[in-house]
Image (cartoon, rainbow, N blue to C red; front, side, top):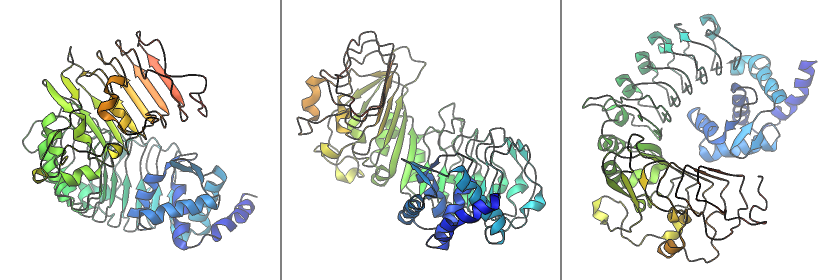
Length: 483
């Protein structure tokens, strides 16, 4: 009966416009049941699998949604369980010789399958299992994709594991407990996509510099990473996407050859990457940030910025970030071991010269376009600032968190509005805001002096703000909101 149902559903699959679109559809069955797949991440996989460029890949997602083979959830897509079972039936049984899939996602495995089962495979998903160690040495000249993500217990992979995977394009280790990458990773000559985000990796091996075909390197939230040898990043000459948000936030290993020791060393290597077009980065010094804002190409690439500020009394000027036109995410936090805040946050227009390396250019910045891409702002502890009036220059802000600050009195100051006037008296700084979270702000008295429309609002959370007596709301403020 199961086969009869699948045969009927397969009509939609057979009606897809090309073999490429069919392969993209089957690719979605590699993920865990009920898994919400980020569109951007899926497109990244497909690019590295040579299914098409970014525009074509998004078009394919649209066609699969239109054919009711994928469900669309804003920035995610999802496969209905019955559709997924049908896709696995096609990839693993009905058209097995053509696709050669092996999918045991969420199957409670404690060991990888026997080496013999790898013989003809092209794509393998072992995500979300309980595998602890991998000692096998499979001979897999045809394997293109390997998902080991969400194996939280996975601590060790033998050096020989990657020895015979010459064709591997995609290796996803997201969310594993890996502390050290095996030296054998240098054997992955064809690798284009490597995801180490959310792992316990402590250092990148020098052998990583051999992966000259790597296009995507994802290291986000590798909070234990304390060592990147000099020359590794600059050697990855094909790199297009580098995600280093929340990297090396614990104690960094000493050594002159460690790129994480000095922001300027890392910035120098980043500038060697001619094909880089997407970058998220962690910066830990004001001098490093000043150097960064004078690199024209890196500013254009920047999508997310983590500012782990800063030892010593210094000043952070918001205008330094104004030319990061594609910046969508800012997370700033001061040191937790300081009794008093150490960093002044100011908004003073400054002049730099075009021959100084790009930077901010002159002081006449177009305020209407300063922070158009910014959607998330998280401001942590230990800053000397009394307001956040500059956020009216971020009209597309959807998430605002402000926490652990002893000095903030207002979110938006009426007195300072003229300093950042955007030319529209009816301008609403919170028009697209969905989440507003205020935590431990003992001097906060006002968010905004009058009621505003919050048409997109989903949630407001206020904790430990004893001086805040009124929210900028009235009976129609959240019209259209959910809560």
